[in-house]
Length: 107
Ligand SMILES: [Zn+2]
Ligand SMILES: [Zn+2]
Image (cartoon, rainbow, N blue to C red; front, side):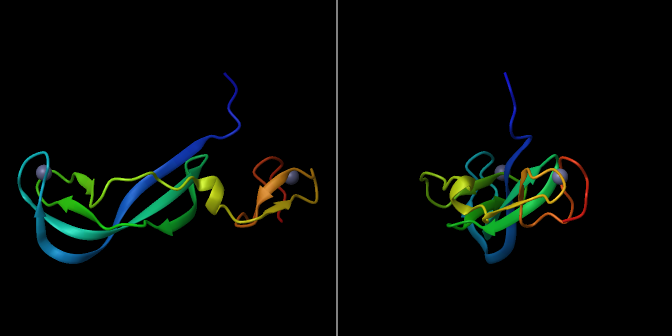
């Protein structure tokens, strides 16, 4: 197994749109309707975040975040900014980075 990519996409809750708008699927408690955001982490550092497409219900009791509607998630590859290259090692790096993750030189 060879990893090109150390990290992943996590979903987080943004601001509350409507309080107690729904019920938790797991515990049945009151759930707030919240905006969602997705956070792409590389090497455990958040490098990119973007709003989720759909609001979700966040349970006040158990913290379960359940989507307002089910559907295919857009892949982060569609949403990544264009590539740049490090001047020192000429590897492709994200334009959001200030330092090259491969050789550590500033970009
Ligand atoms: Zn719950
Ligand atoms: Zn480099």
